[in-house]
Image 1 (tube, rainbow, N blue to C red):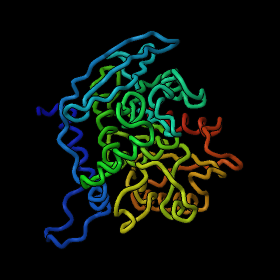
Image 2 (image 1 turned 45 degrees about the vertical axis):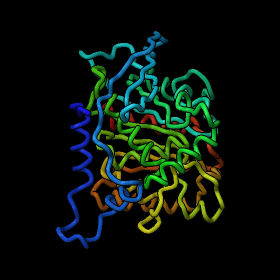
Image 3 (image 1 turned 135 degrees about the vertical axis):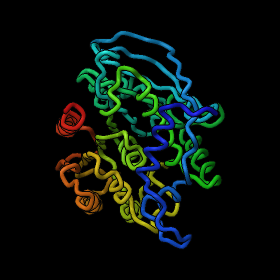
Length: 335
């Protein structure tokens, strides 16, 4: 299928970010990035045309809410909400933030929660960002919102999809990353968006999605994750049944989840954690952020990584966590 201009650009950017082959010999040791791509499931397909459609438009207080769909793979359309702040236009493009929704077993929600249409007001973060002047996209992840199955419900469908990708030699994270890269393609197609000022934010599974997509999407220059860095060391020590995007077959031969986040360097990354969050045991989190910090130091970008651990707080988006997220976006997307 014909490749879009945006698709061609990201394919080149990702190829550059991934680096050239390590040495000329077939026996040369793969780089950490190359090893990660192999574990995920191999190279990304050539981007198809987005074929975007706008289904509905509604004016809200301070922003325009659009219900849209676009194609991530031939025949696979993703529904999303786009929030366009008043004043953003082709003549006055604004920075943009992609918001990846949480899991929480709320398969019926997906994109509608950050878009402010349902769920917890704590997580109406897409609305909050739009009112701060950012163009925001909130897509449904596979198995959530409008991307549920007619045959299997909730967690059964998610388990089915994870296993379907595994037997194909891939994993759920591979598909999630592909879909998120296409969301950035879509943002770049919007005339209201400053294509050199795009970031992303996610809570819980959305935070996992943030550090998963970061190494593969160089157009994301500022990333914020809230309350999710479950290391395999912690998962195995405390017997956590975590959501499927966290599990990348074979990756423990090369590293743990913080080593993936470290591949985002030198682009700006901030992570929030709750000290009592059982989903990201703090002992391993403290070690993990040091792994990420070392990667940023080695990239000559120590000032581009920060983290915050809030004492006595669990799996939430607190006022202090959100303040730090806002400030990180302001610093790196509005300058």
